[in-house]
Structure formats: C-alpha cells, structure tokens
Length: 315
Image 1 (cartoon, rainbow, N blue to C red):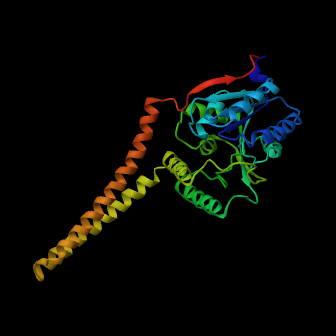
Image 2: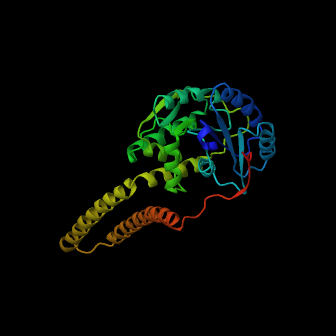
Image 3: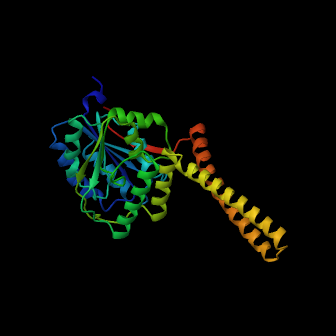
C-alpha cells in the first residue's frame, strides 16, 4: 500500500517570518493531531522568510520527521503560491489549511473534520468574535459584499484560512493551473457539497500581519476578475450610457449654435467632455489589460514559485 493511501489527514501551513509564533503553534498543533486517532502529516511551506523561521522548521522536522514535511522557497512568492506548492505534494485524503499566526486555533481542526466525515467536500471556517482591528473588520465586510455581488462565490468569511477540503477538490485546484487566484474561492467553485462552520478566533500571538491594505485590495481584485466578467460588463454598460449622453449633448450644442450662435464658453465644455471620455477609455483599457494578463499567464504556464529544498522522510 502506498504512503498516500495510509495518510488520512494533511495539514498545510504557509509560513512567512513567523519565528515568534512557530514554537507555540507546534506545541499546540501536534497534540491535537496526535489525539485524532488518524494518520496525518503536517506540511510547512517557508515562503522565503528572512528571520529564523527556516531554522525552527528544520528543528521541528528533526523532532518529528515521520509526520513533518518542509518546503523551502528561494524567495517570497505569496501565501497562495505557498499553499499551492503544498497542495501539489499532499498525501492525505482530507486537507486542512491553517495560518501560522495562531489567530485560527489548531484546536478547531476537529470541528472541520466532523463536517468532512459527514460527507462535505469543502468546509469553510467563519470566524466568531474576531480579534482584528475595526478597520480590518470593516474592510473584510466590504470585500465580502463586493465579491458576493460580483461573483457566484458565496462564502461568509473569505478571509478565514482555517478550511478543510477533500482530496478530489484539492486535485481539482492543482489541475486548474491557476497562478493568480484565491484558492478558497477556487476550491469552493469546484466543490459539490460545500458548507461552513463557526470557528474561534484569537489575537495574533506575535509579530504583525503580512497583509497590507494594498495586498488585500490586490487579492480581492484578482478574485473578482478571475471568477467574473462583471467589471467588463459594467464598464460596457457605462460606456454605452456615456456615448448616448455625449451624442445628446452634441445635438444640444449643435442646436444652440444654430439658434443662439457660436459661444466661446462652449469650447471649455467640449474639452471637459473630451477629458472625461478619455478617462473612461483609460479605465476600460486597464480592465481589459487585467483579463489579457491573466490569459497570458495561463498560456505561458509559468511556474509561480521556486523551491530550494524539501525536508521529508524518505518513507
């Protein structure tokens, strides 16, 4: 029997500059997994950390080599590429993703597994009593609203990393070859029987969040443009409306010129209309460029990450 057939659970943890959280994470995670009564593996992806994260992960592998695997990136490639690299190498029948900052307690993993045991192939966590700042909570509510209205992805809490997937869903994510998308949303779109469960949320144990406001905006822009053509359609409708209004304005100005005569002030009005239409065209070109860029990345099939080494048992 192969190793993949004997492992029931894979826990995937992307890590970037988390030396302050790793010792506490491991001290809480492994006892939880040991108490499940099922075979498991833990896959850490070191996403080009510049602190002692690599040293701590190597020490953890040395301490528990039979259940620990470490993927080392040469450079920082982003959280989702770190998850994708682990997805391509998981051996378990159920895959759980978990952040390393301890905001999602590892003690909540059995809650997710209860749902996968019940037959659900995609289980999303919904954070209760969030310990983030008010600004981050409001931004999260806003992007959730935009995503729910712009795409068919209906997730209550898309920012929660604590999730469980069946092996079939993860294999589908890997086969998609998507290098620029939001993995939880892609997995949700591939699932046949998704569900959500409430999970606890804690304050970050150490360090600061690696997600800036810009990265959050960029992530959600990728999400919307990957799963929906709504921005293009809205822009097309807006452009048609502007064209109709511009045509009516030209007719009105033409009639005024015939009835009242030429007006110097009308020149500035025309310039204002021209500048407005040019700005509309620039926005549309940017949207089209985003979609074309994603098509280009899929066509050239460029690797989104580079691995320096993998620590794992030969077995």
